[in-house]
Image (cartoon, rainbow, N blue to C red; front, side):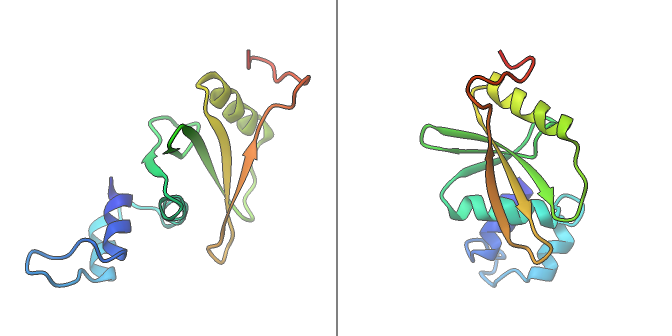
Length: 130
């Protein structure tokens, strides 16, 4: 997982074979085709909060996070971009079917990350969620 490699490198837990620190620019050169900065910011925030994080095996969400008995599907949304409500509804339906909680991670232009839980309101049905 390239995000975990980058996270551990920036935490100082991975070094070169000779024990010297790996430079940030060198690490980004090695991972540039496999790491998206916005996704890394969300990954890092979740890891710092104690979650085990994996890239999504599906296109409907971006990351899977687990901690104890909690399981989350995370969809990353970037500030200033447009998103369809239908895509978010599909994301909530998938989460309900897989018994996971749906979180959106809003990444602001300055790099701050905010998490919001999406859920079905009791008594209101999202078609196909049963």
